[in-house]
Structures are given as structure tokens and as C-alpha cells.
Image: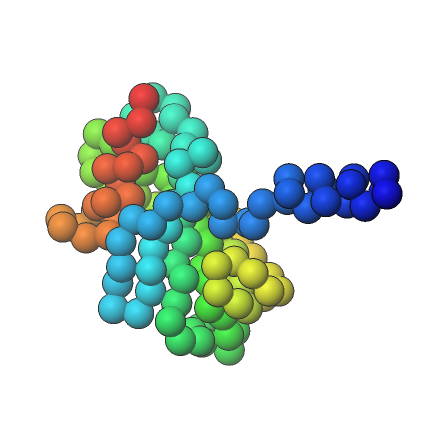
Length: 128
């Protein structure tokens, strides 16, 4: 009986991987989420994780995936961003097998007005 109770308590404390994710917007083929608990500010630079949950299987470089999770660095002063880490998963909402991982820092790119990228930039940069 005690084992069963402990097992139930353990199960109740186990949240899905996407528990912290909040919907930020949509693109033509994906829903975009961000995890505010990952916001890490260093002066005008802010890091935050986000992911695209795709409606259909994506294939890039022969790799098939339904979720692309990215850590972005946002420059709040210059309204630009760059990817600093990337993971891809075989199933939706970051489930399944991790099929790709890369931690190469990308080039800075401007945040397009009225885009999901701008919504992410605003979310990251509005947190003090």
C-alpha cells in the first residue's frame, strides 16, 4: 500500500516536458511556444528557449522532426536575435527521440516587425 501511494505521489509530481511552455503565436505550419522560466538577462542581452511544434513532418538535411527547440539570444537594445542552441525531436511537443542537436552560435538577424519573432523578442525583453 505504501509503495502504491509513493508511486501515485511520484506520478503526480511528474509534469510533462512542455508544462512551462506558453503559446506565443503561429506560423504557416507551426505553433510557437516559449518558456519564460528560461529567461536569463545579462544587461541588454537576454536568452530564452522557444520551440516550433509543426503540423507535418519537417525534413532538413535528411533529418525528420516535428519539434524544433531553440535557445535564442535577444539583443533588446538593437532589436535583433541569434540562435545559440538547437534540438529537434521526432514527435510533437518535444516528445519522442532527440534526432538532432547543435550548439553553434548563429549570426545576428533583425527581428521582423509584426512577426512571431517580434512577439518572442518582446516577451524576452519585457522581463526585468
